Image 1 (cartoon, rainbow, N blue to C red):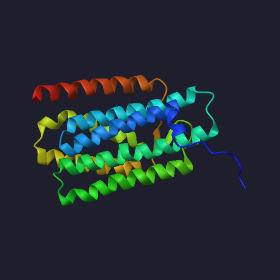
Image 2: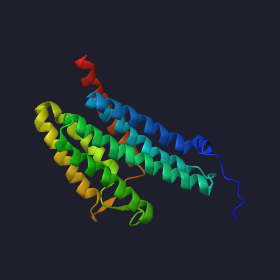
Image 3: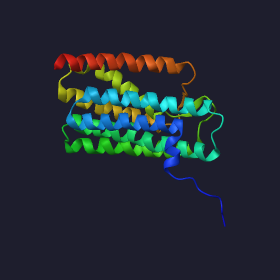
Image 4: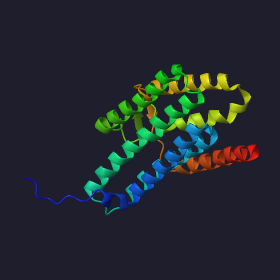
Length: 212
């Protein structure tokens, strides 16, 4: 019989890395809201910040030396759950909304969410190939690439761009589940990510402002 006293659920919410993870979840909720409303550039801004918070929660966790084993395990599970929402549910909703909820976009939405669930479950079991290498493409890369593609949205008709992002997300899903070794970006790459997020947020924000 295990007599060890269990911590309360909310006690883990006060852990700084988990606060960062939850801020990422808040960004995703905004992203989902704007995707449903058809404000796709605002939705992209939301998911870009979700990626940034996702990177920073791990950085903060590694710098904290006094975290318990339970805090580390809980943080890993929380991060994985939020990743499904960030890089599975949100892109699926964005695809459905951009496709005007046409029935033909439902299979694509399913593939995106299923891919994220399968990949994250696999990662939770096996982890990295080594300290600097993933098996397959990490899910956060999907939305970073998608955000870049949205820079060129104005050059396409809405129907054509919907097909383009459909095909793109299916290709990325295939890479997510592949066995191709891909690098795990870390270290100074965080500065590149910060610049990328700030630049694209500024560009998309300016476009949204100009439309008002």
